[in-house]
Amino acid sequence: MRTEKILKIGFWSIPGLIILIFFVMPYLITQLSWSWYFDEDTGVMGDTIGGITGPSIAFVAAIVTFMAFYIQYKANIIQEEGLKNQEAQIIKQQFESRFFELIKLHRDNVAEITLQNESGKKVFVTLIRELREIFKILKNLVIVHNVDLSKEELINLSYMSFFYGTGPNSNRVLKGAISEYHIGLINNLIKNLDDKDIKKAVKKNRNFKFTPFEGHQSRLGHYFRHLYQTIRYIDESKLDIDKYEYIKILRAQLSNHEQALLFFNSLSNLGSEWKDKGLIENYDFIKNIPKDFIDPVTEINVKEIYPKVKFEFEK
Figure 1: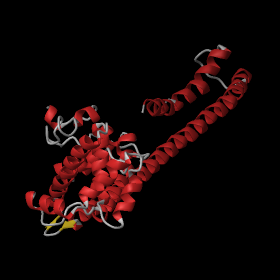
Figure 2: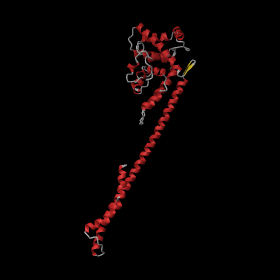
Figure 3: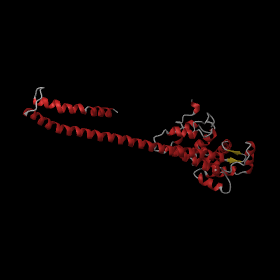
């Protein structure tokens, strides 16, 4: 703006400059008086004026031409910036359109999850209860086999067993997925989870409307893959946006039980990238898990696993 103001002042100063060059300068140079006569002396003045004004006009013309080109140059820059801003707005609109489409797909995925007579977010309440039953069984077996496992390893084994379940085909897949652990412990865990009497007792005690320990690949596989791809879509975006605010919108779609199950998933072999890539801590993605919802003594301390997450209960 300051440059344009200077150019305008310069442009309107040209008439005064011309008057100065045409009339004042010749007079000063020839030292003539104020009496003007048309004789040989004034002829000298005319020659002087011609000699001075020719280059002067050329100089002024050059300045005017430069100013015209400069103004056009500035106009081109403004137009180019406008086009860039317009293009950036279109790209951002496309990003947001895709983002909210992914949000809708997530809601649809949740709505389509069913477990006997339950559906939607209510299913996750039941899933957490089943996972905890597996955790209890595993802790007892660890004592029997005298195997030293960390809390994270206990969570991993429990979640993998919960996800794949037991059965003719599931047993083989589960063994392959947790083959790094004590073989005797694994065999006994599968034996317990596949035991009809144990299943019947757990079903009765927890008032389950379904037979437990048969796995949830079909329910949770697609759910977590899509959730992961959605957050990576935002995290990997090159746009100049507040990524935290967008992911906060995504996080708001998850119930407390969904966030708790995501926490357990992130400690398993299946969901380790949530933790390894910093997606949970960078975006406080499980911040709504209530205090002691996951028992820090008998289960695992969520805050120790994710110390950077600003949990709501810390307020």
